[in-house]
Length: 135
Image 1 (spheres, rainbow, N blue to C red):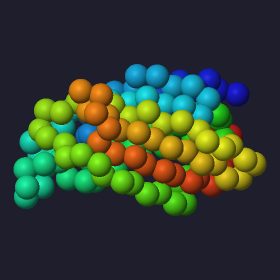
Image 2 (cartoon, rainbow, N blue to C red):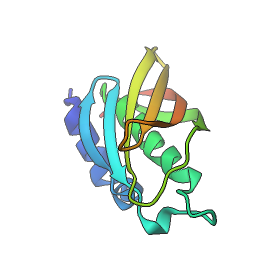
Image 3 (cartoon, rainbow, N blue to C red):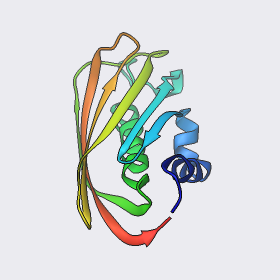
Image 4 (cartoon, rainbow, N blue to C red):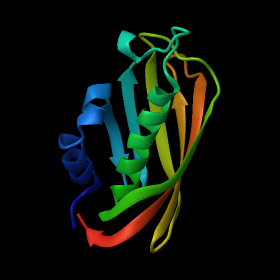
C-alpha cells in the first residue's frame, strides 16, 4: 500500500484546480491533512473580499487529501461550510482537516480554516463514500 504523502502527491499532480488555487501541502497523515494558500486579487467578489468558494475550495481539497490518505479511494457525498470571518487579498489561509470517523464505506471529516493571525475564518464538514478500490 502507498504512503499517505505519496497518495496526496499523486492526487495533487493531477488536480489542476488545487494547483490554480496555489495550495501548498504542509502535512499529510492517515486521515489528516494540513494545507495553505495565499488569496490573490482574482479570487475576490464584488465586496472586495474573497469569494466564499475560496475557503470552501481549500477545505474541499483538504477533505479529498485526508479522506484518500489511507489508501482507499474516497469521494465526497455531502459537505457544508460556515463562513465566520471575511477574507482579504493577500491573506494566508491554513486549513487543518481531521478524520472524525473512518468506516468501511463512509468517512466523516472536520476542517477549520484560519488566516495568518490564527483567526478562524471558516468551519467545514464533509462526508465521503469510500470505494473498495485502493490507490
